[in-house]
Length: 253
Image 1: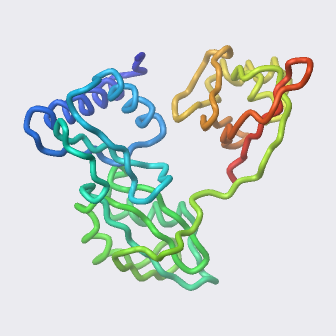
Image 2: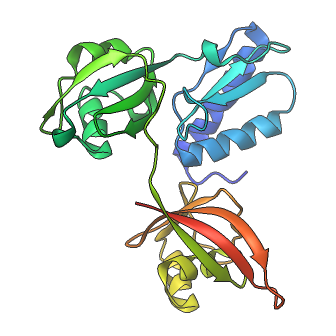
């Protein structure tokens, strides 16, 4: 797997160390919360490592976007309850509801690294965030405001979680799943302008900036176009008699 820079090389070494320590010491080891690019890399490293250490990706609830990698001892059954993840519910007045950016900023303002913060699910009267157990006491004791909004924090989560994202569905017809075709379709650009945006490194797929226009997207890929937004390629719906594809993309709103 090609690694873009020294930062990714260091991340690769870290993941390989987790797997190796779990295999040799028979003790579970966990990464921090992974972003989209790190998750793609980690899945590749785990696949390349083959057998030897059991593993599980988990972010505190089913369908989490930011997840930890848990590396377990050989023949040990991976267990979600072993992960050092604590859910916190942050309450506030609905009329003063902070946004995701406000909440994330208030957490990082406590000198908490991004790798210790998982998904933040924002609702009308409360938000639920998933954090590393190492930083949960700091948040419980010190988080009093998010943006201009006063908040109260308690450990645990309600039965009904707020949605992670809101989407606008974009049903489209494309000639292929090439990156330049997909960028042109969702952004309403000509194929050449889409290709130019890619070559100018304005397009990222699963967190990694791509400069090759001919790359192919797969269902489930998340891609962003600077100045146009962020999109999820949900699925191929059908194909036409002329070989074009009916697809469904979703724009993050």
